Image 1 (cartoon, protein in one colour):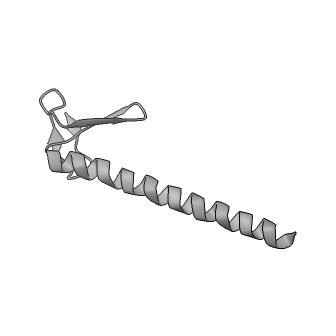
Image 2: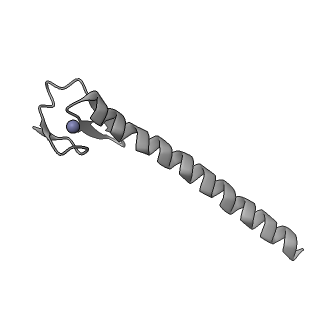
Length: 68
Ligand SMILES: [Zn+2]
């Protein structure tokens, strides 16, 4: 049995059609909702990461520019 990390239910990994794999680790879910909940925050997070990396590099560029 596998553990649904979204809702905490135990899932039969051979029976469930709801699964995902990230960085070589397989995750199993009891329902489509749990699978989507697992996938969506990751996308939001990477968007957030991109935005913060962008603003950090913008800040550095501004700082370099101002010191010249
Ligand atoms: Zn679930």
